[in-house]
Image (cartoon, rainbow over all chains, first blue to last red):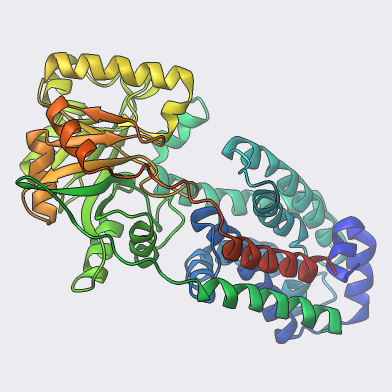
Length: 190
Length: 286
């Protein structure tokens, strides 16, 4: 089991240990994590959309969809940059936060794996409902991160702020993509 | 990185390399039937940026692999992605790209083809259709099930150039019945209305899984638009069933076109995809 999985399963203890282990960040470690996440996303979307993978396909899709990592970075920056009590550098804080990718990586990889093995796609409704798991899981990881890395006495509030920024920006993109806020409100029954 | 992680990364790279070795299928030979070209067209495709998965240059390749001659890029309430796609593909071999918009409003969605500017969707279906016509385009009722037909009064239906008779959602029994009901209403109000088959491709299935066989006088965007306006189309659903006027259906049947491929994995693509997925899972978890 690697450190990222350990972090996903026991976030508080693992963030605590990692924050004590090293206070300065490593750009290579952060870059490696971001590349892994981009590759996971590009591969999953390529399989879903075309049933194939290739360097051209995955790199093109990952490059275009990298804006989702920008959204993640902005949401993380909103809570990392102003955290005065943290004992690690900003770079180290970003490095540690992007180690919390396991819930979403599994969400991206397991449906295409099912498709390859069984030969049938999971329906959109199942995949969307399954997204509730990484959403809730990641909120728990952020709470532990706020507590043990950012050393915030109000970890719950930090979590709410982070999730609000993250999902607010995501909703803005969804509204852009589906034809406007009216349709988003229609979909949620308002 | 440990030796295991290097091995996992190698597996991912080998999967990508193997997937890239698969030969690209040749462009489809054009089919001639009497005075017409039979062009396979998908009038309802979404791309990125938008709620489609693929950026424009990959879409063209994917559409060609699906055996289509042309497609209309219809992102919701915008034409910028489609215009970019057309500009990017200019002068290169591949399917014809037609600029479109899925005019998306409460009570109606219209797949509009042959646009240059975005159409306002806030003044009702009839006004939107007239705006499409003012640009020289055609307006097609998109997935006309009861969730999407309350915005059409009889006047608006009579203005439509076409309606989606074949669409992946028609496999749901209630939607299938709705599509048939809308077809009867449209035919009563506008006897020459075009029957359209569209994939509504976003992130799964395949472009062209439902498609339109267009009887075009010329192999161009203008030829496709003119054929829809004149009702010279046949819709083909996922099982290869044809919908349209009897004489047009007869012409298409005589051409013996195969039903759309459902894009099953080949042995090669399944192996390369499995290698990449297993490698990534190992990288993420080991």
